Length: 363
Image 1 (cartoon, rainbow, N blue to C red):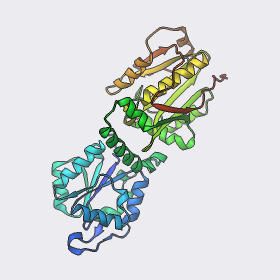
Image 2: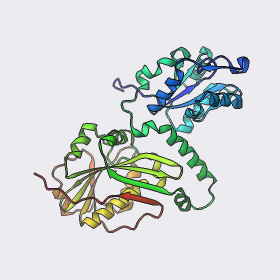
Image 3: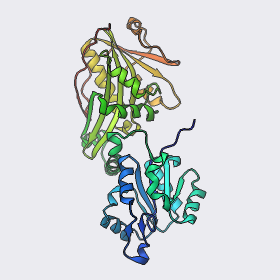
Image 4: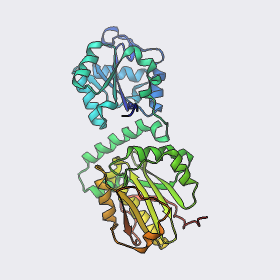
């Protein structure tokens, strides 16, 4: 990977003589090793999720974690008597994380070896390394964003949301209404730039061009009054989804050039992409302009093409395309055209957004 470090997304902790000093079932009273509370809190601030794989009595161990004041930091704990490799595998599958992004820490060489044998891509660490984890490059994401600092809460809300959907017996559209979904579309500022950059980097299935925009490129667009850099966030009755979409738009006199639309895969089922396009097309119809959207097929973004086609974009030849002279085409990019019409509001998502202003004159 050209020397790049794969960042750990989830640390799975053993308990006895790893997270705490002593063996719970033998010693009764145990305490966290010195400095580990600070390690747990720091990893959490960086957006690294944490879980547990421990051979212990579940209720007893969980009660001790609560008494020590750290239980809230651990998602999907697996505390029982089965192989720890099974526990780690289940955690990775539930989070939908690649094994290369999972770390396992345990004081017992035999337990680490068992995990490595069955899950060779999972990185294992001796308990003696615990206090140094935040200093290792694989535990140091390049940026800390609003969303990374609350990633644990977002995943917890997601589990509750998934459970509610499983239990809901009615039509999908009724369930979506019950979520009380709210989408906010607003101009990106300095605080949002890292979130926007992260979205263009991490999103592949719902990225219309597969292009990554750096922070410097995004700042240049922000400084250009002819461009809109919009960040999309969503929330519902369970909590926030965080930043879920990015819209890069150049406003010309007769046409709006949609350079990039990307949405997080985790909100595809809530209709986020369709809702953004519905709003954007309505805005263009209000402004009396056509829309030309860049689309470049990749091996993963078929769903984004479907969203564009469903919204009415096509290969129709239109003279408005000739106005797009400032943006060089990336090889393999198609420019899909739409003559928009006013759109009804979504029946399942409340959209909060300011109207897009008209084009600014270029100098």
